[in-house]
Amino acid sequence: MASYKPTDSKRDEFRRYLERSGVLDGLTKVLIALYEEPEKPTNAIEYIRKNLGGLTEITEEAGATSNVQDSESLEKRLQEAEAENRELRDKLAKLDLAEE
Image (tube, rainbow, N blue to C red; front, top):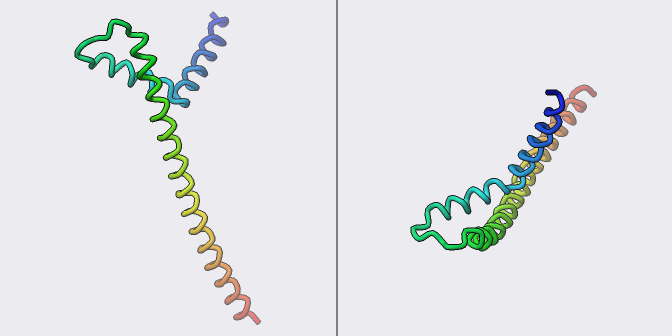
């Protein structure tokens, strides 16, 4: 039984990789779209290829949007930290003056 654990571990690691990279989401969306097609295509593989290609563009755009949002969030946090730093330096300077 112990010989199955490394395989299960590798399988779980690969599944997490597919989830993180958006592969599972992409495939799920294409399969749902195929399921919802009123007239099923004669070549399902070709349908998946065509529609998965469109998802690549969507995924890249979403990734770019996410990066912009991350950048904006980091910029805001930096500005807040700099403001707090200035405030604390001012308080420290006032304490130093009061002690002299």
